[in-house]
Length: 363
Ligand code: KG4
Ligand code: ZN
Image (cartoon, rainbow, N blue to C red; front, side):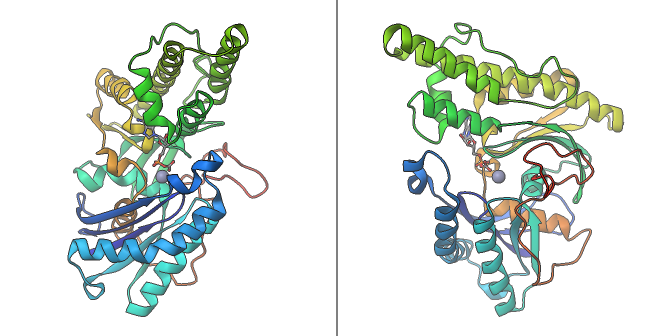
């Protein structure tokens, strides 16, 4: 079946056409087009939801047309239209959902609203025959959680961040060191020349049991170190900047590695899979030092390591189409009355942590 997947939940407008056999691993990506919005938000130092929503509304038709043309597929050949119907910035999610519904209605196509996080968590099976259950660490600009993926719609959350997501922390560090956005790749490049041991930075929450993470204190520690230097000498040198980046990146990698070790053990307590897979997903998974640290944990814990190619780790339409292909094994399509959801945790039973309030957990 050919599936069109649409993504608009944050600041990337994505459309992709994939070929999949619903319920069976490994899909074929015929075309995947992503238009980022870095330039639109650059002046504000972060994603402005209204600007993002408007850009998605303006660009969804263009990226869809390009993806179909690149795939050499006409609307008439599609078997389904899928869209990330949450969680995310609601204006953007709505733009995608309305566009997908319009297309489904006009062409009489089945409509699938899928969870954006499920797209990330199921990505390993889009590219490799990874069997359920497996363990995945989702690390992006907006998310950070350990999930046991037991089936297309069965996720157990073992833990996650109690404040910032790691990508968000990378972006803030880049901002406070004057490195520009997106911060992750810039901090990583800067860190290459730095000494990770020069500054004594904390390894947050290592003293607390379980798999929860925190990055806000680490960010503050970097800011304090920078401020101290600036107060003493009126600024920081290039070497000091590189050392701060290296120290920060090492602290993130070490903390993620230790919590991943614990998540591997929690997985073993639940499943007797002989060689389970540890996979990673999300934009931060592009970081070389973090990938290396996690691969070493997988090796030590007897897990097979799987990191999807970076283009599939960041937001795109192919993982949305794939989540729909997986969902087809366990349920039918959605009604056109489906609502866009700003909050949508994958594991409804896990204790809410991030951004939970009267309306419940965010993700
Ligand atoms: O998954 P993603 O494209 O978007 C969502 O947040 O959903 O992830 C983007 C995040 C940004 O915060 C970016 O700084 C971070 O991933 N990132 C990196 C690297 N490349 C991207 N963080 C650390 N090292 C990198 N090489
Ligand atoms: Zn994402």
